[in-house]
Each structure stands twice: as C-alpha cells, then as structure tokens.
Image (cartoon, rainbow, N blue to C red; front, side, top):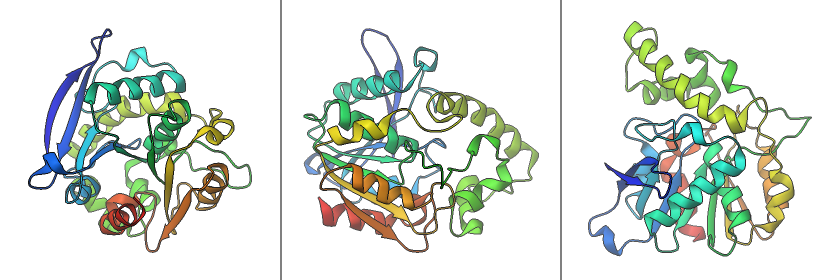
Amino acid sequence: MKSRFIKLKPSGTRIEVVEAGPPGSKKAKDLLYLHGAGGHMPGDPLIAALASKYRVVAPLLPGYGKSTGEDDLRDMLDVTLHSLDVLEALKLRKPIVVGHSMGGMIAAEMAAIAHTEITRLCLLAPAGLWLDDHPVADIFSKLPFELPGLLFHDAAAGQKLLTSGVRMEDPEFLKEFLVMNARRLGMAGKILFPIPERGLAQRLRRVTAKTLIVWGREDALIPQVYGDAFKKAIFGSKLVRITKAGHAIGQEKPAAVLKAIKDFF
C-alpha cells in the first residue's frame, strides 16, 4: 500500500489517498473504498485482500490521516458532495464503489444523488438507517477496551488488529488513540451522532446501481436486520450474510468479502 495526495478545486482541500493493487494493476478494475468511522486499520486486511484482484483507491475523509478540510463539512450533503468531488478528481474508470459502515452510508448517498455515475455499489454493514426496535449502539460513548467486542466476532483477534499487537492498557497507545479518535469522531459525529438518521431511507429508492449488501451474522453494532431494510429499499439488490463475522466484516473476514464482490460483479 502507498499513499499520495490530491488537492480538490476550488477549495484547496488536501486529501490523502491510499492505493494498492495486484502486479500490473493498471489493467485491473478500479475499486473505490470508503472507510468507516474508525478509518483504515494498520495494514488494513480488507484493502490488502481487495488489492489482490482490483486496483484499490481508498481516500481518507477530512479529519482522518493527513486529509484536511473537516471544518468545511457541516452535514450529510456536504460530505456526500465532497466524496463525489474526490471521485471526480481521482478519474477512476467506472469503479466498484465499496463503503463500510459510515463509508457505506456515504456511498449509498452518493449513489442516490449521482445515480447515473455510480453503477456498481457494495455496502458493507452500512450505517444510515434507524429502526426504533433495533437501536444502533452508540460508538461515541464507548471506551477503547469496549471496541473489540463491539466490532468483532472474535474480540481477541480484533484487539490485535486495532492495536497492531500493542496492549490497549499501554499509556502511549491510549494517548495516541484518544488524540486520533477525537479528530476522527469529531468528523464522524457530524453525520452519525446522536443517531445515523439523515433521511437516507427516503433516498435509497433513487439508487439504480447494481448493489451488493454484505453483513456479518454476529454484528453487535448494527444488527443484521438492517441488512434486510437496505435490501428492501434498494430495488434488485442482493444481501449476503457472512458467518462468524462482526461489524468490522471486511477486516475480520476479508477473503469472504472479496469472494462475495468477485462473485457478484
């Protein structure tokens, strides 16, 4: 994986973009990956798996990594238009647009607004809907040690992925984590807090992209019943459930997610 930077016009916003692909990736199909509220994990397993087949381009939202411009994004519309500007600036060739959690919410909004430009869409446990009988857990109230069990079916393995093997109790890790998280969740909170309901339910009918929805059967953050709700709202979409996978489905079961995408598209 390597990083580069693009500058959006006319705002001058500087966006960090992670790229990876197979040998001879210039001939591989383009895939745009939009991350969730936690950003990219160290050596992200999903990006690595997708890069074995596709030319993966994974921009970091303002507030994440070295991307700037978070103060200019006030609400869901701003975030969606920003993401469409990034897509245009990257000059990708009809990419498969893949979004996880918050990134799935953004990808769905992009497909609803620019439904003639986004023709292939994969939503990995997307946020964006709200069912009163099945509330989504509040990530903003969680402490670091609570996250592995909330995001992963295998909490012990998840903790190793989140920390690169460092103990969560390590003071240096906690200091760095809390500083980074304050900036990331400050951005994410604009569209997810207090609940991720921003009217997406009324706009999903506009999505015309060929759409794959993937959910972990053991998702403790966004219950899998939301997968049925997305499937019902997006005409012709397909829902795939993956066993022994939590909310961080792509990082926990990257090979299964890659297979689902390859089989569908």
